[in-house]
Length: 232
Image (cartoon, rainbow, N blue to C red; front, side, top):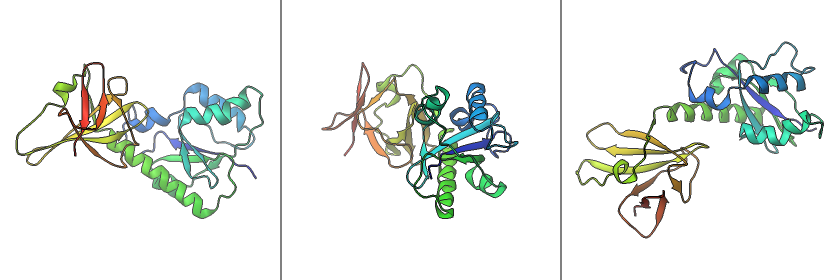
């Protein structure tokens, strides 16, 4: 049985997030148009559940616990239904209060065609949503650098307490970095992907790479004026 799991988040019940500009809302809050579309597609399944004001995540994979990007999910599974090119293969699953709390605020889940989806897979999905929430919370502390000048933003620093600049990963919009110190507060900052082209980006939070303006054998990234290099 093909199933499609859409993940919904309660806007007003996400503890610890700003109700105006949290990254969780920016990333997963449905637009009015998206909510209207999903209300129509799930008109028979959703009962009194309303997509308006909800934050959505999307899950795919053979066991239904691989989180998918909203835009990609819509293009692959939702838009063809709207355009009359395909039938709806989606099934709406509303999360319990306990699951919602554990996930960090998601109200429900919808899954793309899955071969198997057991309670164990559902638990893994909830844990995956929780990791997304934590990751978004972590990214909220990064300050956006505007008018980027790599030679200034990654200034070569010979102070003994300075540990260096570390790339923490990327998402759809930004690259994330930390300037680390021994005796002072680390500086967390981010650059837009248009301001820096990273040669081998990876997802935020899975690794870190020390980078520098000092030339080495391996280029890390560049823009139209400067280059960054990986430190050995």
